[in-house]
Image 1: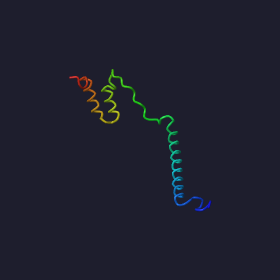
Image 2 (image 1 turned 90 degrees about the horizontal axis):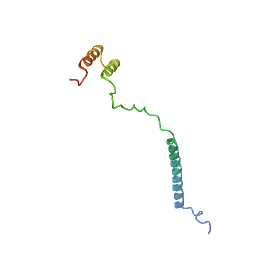
Image 3 (image 1 turned 45 degrees about the vertical axis):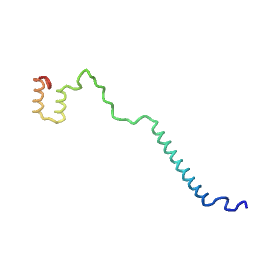
Image 4 (image 1 turned 180 degrees about the vertical axis):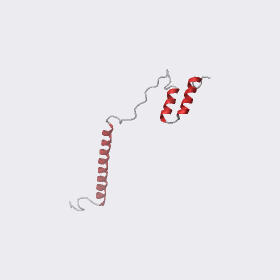
Length: 98
């Protein structure tokens, strides 16, 4: 009578064993993935773009002539337009001086 019914394993026993093993391996793999991701994040932060220099509220960032020269250097305006605008800036005192 001791070993009747195959050592106590029937359809339910095999089903529970299968589900238990699948859960065990899923939790084991999930734990390894979480551990690797956590250890990968504990290092220094990834390099990003450099921070812009702090703005000085006491003076403008660039003067109009410098902006005009930069536009000319980039090719946004031609030489004739550059000379005309530069002359306008120097004679009229720039925009807003009216």
